[in-house]
Length: 260
Image (cartoon, rainbow, N blue to C red; front, top):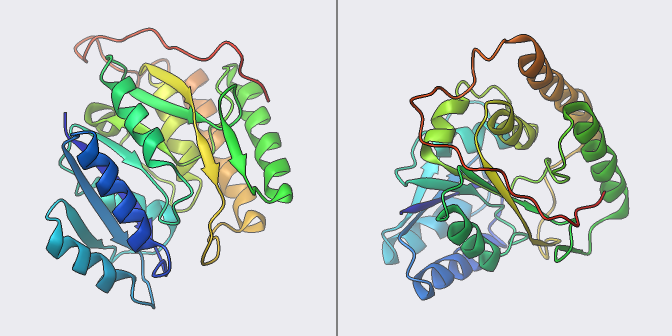
């Protein structure tokens, strides 16, 4: 199984090299067939040049330029339009996501699940240097989603997740242009009946650069996507649910000690 990693990047010259070196080193060590697609989302620094140089040394690393409207969601969607692997994971360019957790995603996906979601807020998961205002907003948003949809997974808003190719195909059309894509993708997977496993993961705050997420700009956009998928869940009569001809569905698995 070939694993594609999509990395949206805008002005990440200070972190992208270390991120790629860590990812490629771990993938080689674990003998995982991989490709890495870095999507340059309108960078004004040396991000693209750094990725191109690394790509010359490792043909599995590719630079794709988002020439459409910019935004986190648009960059991820651009990367998804170019991936060739059997499964894909979205990872942040600032090294906040763990390469070791990516390996665990790959192993878990190999058990037959359609998706693997990570949670920083179950037993075994952790966050390092998470800004407390964002942490509070994160927990409130995830609690709202859990209550609205009636499911136990408690870290929907985190971008770092892994999906098989047929799940991505089953999500289209994706409509979120910003960080609200991080909610659209897993909720579509769940609402449309794809199986998933949840494992604990670690998140570490960036050491260089600045976060592109602006909470005050995202509230209504997150709410729109959440309500859009809630309406699909209850009013679509299963029109977008996976069909009987899709690959066999596994039972969802979640850690029994999850908490808010």
